[in-house]
Image (tube, rainbow over all chains, first blue to last red; front, side, top):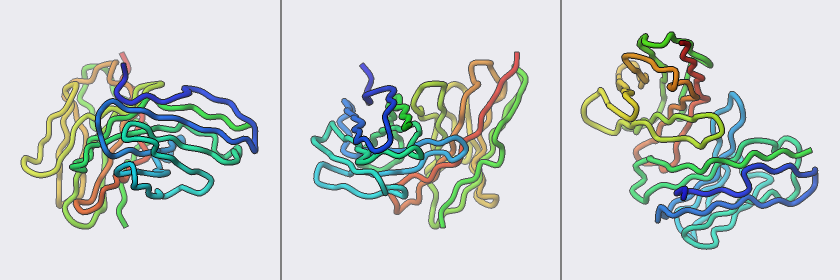
Length: 113
Length: 113
């Protein structure tokens, strides 16, 4: 089984719909992250969490919200999806030492029509 | 402001030839530098990192990277390219006192038989 599992792998949704992307991990890491990948823009941080009670906004948090249900689970929600949120979304985890070695999920490809 | 630049969108190399993927950075304090690789339809995978010590860092799959403080560069290298090295490569930097990684836009590496 994968260390970091994202569901769904692909999703097509309509403008205005609420959608949740889920992430679970078996690494035992405290830190979890949600990134968005767009061609030519690299990875942009949406939200991050250093433990269950700690949630922080990243550089592009507008239009998104997160929930850290447990150490192993970190979900991302789009409250009212819009077409420019069409992207590849990645969940990642890292150790508390902050040494920077991240483990990524396989991604969720989201299309908003 | 902290930043990472990958000046080449794409690098083309013949199989068996040496390859270099360039990365320059700007960060306050001592940099933590990373290379990750993304294969199609997969999440990013850690290749190697530099935190301190020897300027030449060896990583997975025969890759290495050279840290050059005066040129603020951290170029990824491999002596002999394989077709299977074709992928998207990301450079990232983390300030020693900041927990977030700043990502380059990525470089597509194409190895031709």
